[in-house]
Amino acid sequence: MSGLASAVLLTSASAKASGVGAQAAPAPAPTGPFTLPPLPYAYDALEPYFDAETMHLHHDKHHQSYVDKLNAAVVGHPDLASRSVYDLVANLDAVPMEVLAAIRNQGGGHANHSFWWETLGKGGSAPTGELAKSIDAKFGSFSAFQEKLTAAATGVFGSGWAWLVKLPGGDLEISTTPNQDSPLTVGHKPIVGIDVWEHAYYLKYKNKRPDYVKAYFSVVNWDAVSAKFADGKKA
Ligand code: MN
Image (tube, rainbow, N blue to C red):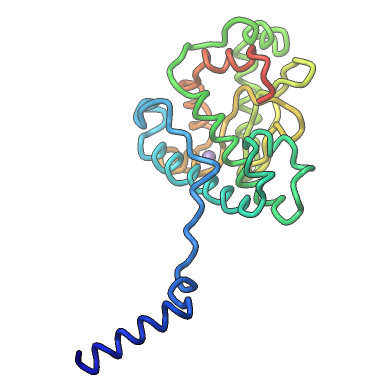
């Protein structure tokens, strides 16, 4: 063995013995317990209202980022890691201070988007059943409801969401939340939501949020939304 080869071997063995190699390797980013749900339809299914490129970015990058950062936040918190994201954002008062902002923002982002994909699609053109009756009773008509939700969505200052929520007593209400705050945090069940973060519309609609909100009403899966209202679940 040449002098050089034995020197290399010696160096390699020393590094192993001292654990230098193990310490130098960064810990891999956690891939769970939370996972990105697949889109329940093709990326181009909502064309021409929501374009495929925006759907790819929105789902594969933005939503994935909320999931990744939520997973990072619950490292070392098995009590949080074992619960559903809906349960986490519905009980922020039970979350330790050091991860409260992360659970609120990243958990809220994961919860809001997981809800959202399920409520989009080409399922029906209007609410049905109990939801249809409740919308008429609360707002007078479906078109009056659309006008009020549109006004709420276009009026959100900065990033956030406009919602139709079900109150604990069963009544409907239109509300808004800033950032990724979830209606679940104040005990409201989301039924309809409009994401008005610029990442949801800027590629196609640029600064014209009202055009995007108008397009949104062409891609609501009213069958899924009506079922959500009637299913009796908290989230
Ligand atoms: Mn979004």
